[in-house]
Image 1 (spheres, rainbow, N blue to C red):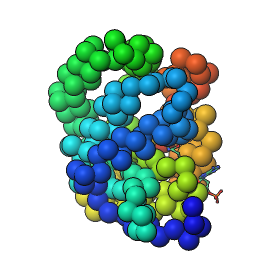
Image 2: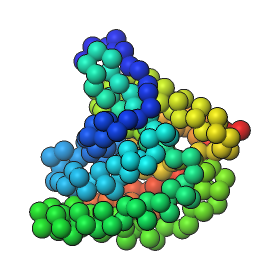
Image 3: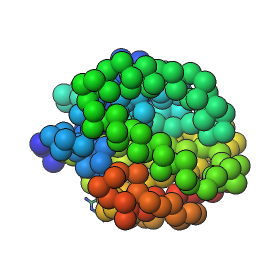
Image 4: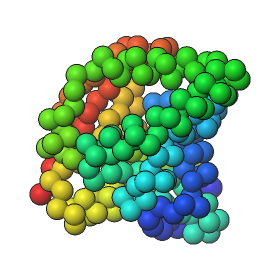
Length: 221
Ligand SMILES: CC(C)(COP(=O)(O)OP(=O)(O)OC[C@H]1O[C@@H](n2cnc3c(N)ncnc32)[C@H](O)[C@@H]1OP(=O)(O)O)[C@@H](O)C(=O)NCCC(=O)NCCS
């Protein structure tokens, strides 16, 4: 790809949904591509778990980076201003969709994906509550770029757009969760003034139980 790529940042639109689902999958294993790894072959279930919700319910708080030359979506930042409300909405509106996909499709066609989802859910339920973080840093984000667009300043621009949105709404802080195995994301967040608030273990992937989740936060007032 040309080094002098020209990127614009704009709010997420409904038509970006498939691109978001693809990017989520292509960066889904601690920041690396899940394609061909056999870890989670059900792309749709992966999207339902980690990205599609935002394309329906949080478009005002989410952004995409678009390659102006090709029109391709290079990456996204999916976010919410109010994690406590978002988690309630997710359970109310989304759990049934995930369960339907899991039981009607994944269980029969993608058994490894069903097992991985089951594993994620059992591990996450052992984590301590994050309610104090949700109160102090109410907003949250997920950011992912296609491999060819990484380390060119695009992630930084998406973060600036979201931080401006959060500040503009008068929200005092923002947080996110990554893994200590993600060697791109950890220096990226540290370099942007985020600090580690909490560590979570074990890792959510059964083949990397030694990984620790890192909850990062930044005050924006
Ligand atoms: C993490 C990510 C969002 C950062 O966005 P980006 O556009 O690549 O980052 P920027 O170019 O704005 O910033 C560069 C900084 O990020 C970090 N970084 C980005 N890629 C890196 C890499 N391959 N190795 C080490 N550090 C890296 C470094 O701190 C770097 O600063 P430096 O170049 O001065 O060392 C992007 O690399 C990405 O999408 N990675 C895959 C998906 C992912 O891990 N998402 C985060 C999930 S929590």
